[in-house]
Amino acid sequence: MHERRSFKDILTTLGYDPVEGFGEGRKIGILIVLSILLFITACIAVVMGAYDISIAAVYQTILTHLTFGDTSALPRLHNTIIWDIRVPRIILAISVGGALAIAGAVFQGVFRNPLVEPYILGVSSGAAFGAALGIVFPHIFFSIQISAFIFGALAVIFAYMLARVRGETPIVTLILAGVIIGSIFSALVSLLKYISTDTALREIVFWLMGGFYYATWGDIRMLTPFVLFCFIILWGLGWKLNILSMGDDEARTLGVNPERYKLIVVALATAVTAFAVSLVGIIAWVGLMMPHAARMVLGPDNRYVIPASLMMGATYLIICDTLARTLTTAEIPVGILTSILGAPYLCYLLRHKGRVIFG
Image (cartoon, rainbow, N blue to C red; front, side, top):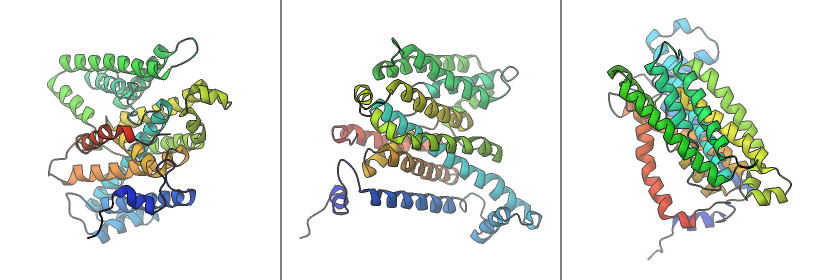
């Protein structure tokens, strides 16, 4: 009779270390595999949809645009569905999923807690309040996206100012400040729901559930370069984040100013989260699940966790969004699917938190 082997035993056979993850060469190999998986997932997602278009027609349309060919020769309906709807939606899902995942990795590193997500400092509640203001008072707040971004960033600024004591920002105090600020903005959102019209209330509810219904090339031109910019900086600061994960006292011992670098990485993570949320609404769990999954395989080194989180988050959100628009004739808000799939994962973390690998 063959002895049953656990997943951990299989990883150990492949060279996995419970503390450091795989070796350097294999970590790079895993990152390459994740990038290939992301590309394959996007290629599959673009051919799936309610309107039946052949695979050849889909890729011919995309190739024509990429090579600056004669797009007027393409069927107008195919061009609209593929290039104006599906492709922007997939690219936006990649950008948002990557943004939330790298922000989650940063917050988990700064707070030294694998159960932290990008919304811990109240950015989601602030953005929700800003979006609700834009919906209820459109004659005052002309852009829902801009209003959501501003108030999402303001929420984190207020939390940071509230938590700052004698020139320092203790982690526990910062988390409590984020909970307080988030609760205040959540109450204000409830107030706006109460005074809004039925149409505005419905729009607020749909915004809170998150989705890529209105993805455009304009959104991509705004968000994607900003996500790449923040990713490059945060990836470059990965080794600083490793030191911050050891605690403030250890960071000072190693010659790193923890307050300065905490402010830098938290500001970048907050900005990229607020920007993503302002465009697509609140999408939960991505920033919690993906960094932890990357850390389980690659170990605690943020130089590998950050890029792995980006690719995992992008792949996961493409899958969820594809399911959201293909499971039923009426599109399901993607935030519902990420929450349904994320809840069992949180149960797993809670049951195994004593054995969570965290640097």
